[in-house]
Length: 82
Image (cartoon, rainbow, N blue to C red; front, side, top):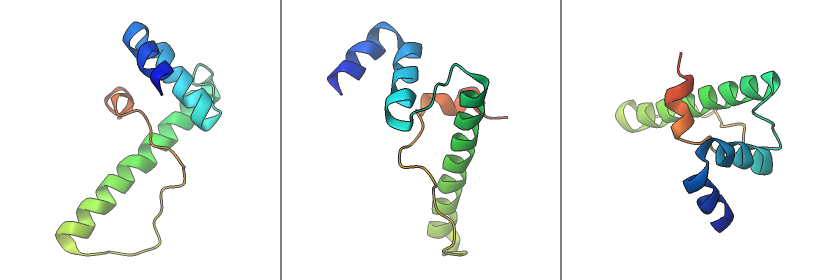
């Protein structure tokens, strides 16, 4: 974790690529990696919406789940929202 923090202060883009490579085994510099990251971000946003619905309207259903083990970098959300 300390390696990531020191990398992020020097090179945020490289640190993000390192995070996705190490945690998710995805190269975000490729077209396939970019698409993977966009799908992951969309699922993450769906999860945030599910939580809001849960607290404000009650559980709509229990079938939804986040299909990834790790969350995306929060700074990637604003870059990739369509």
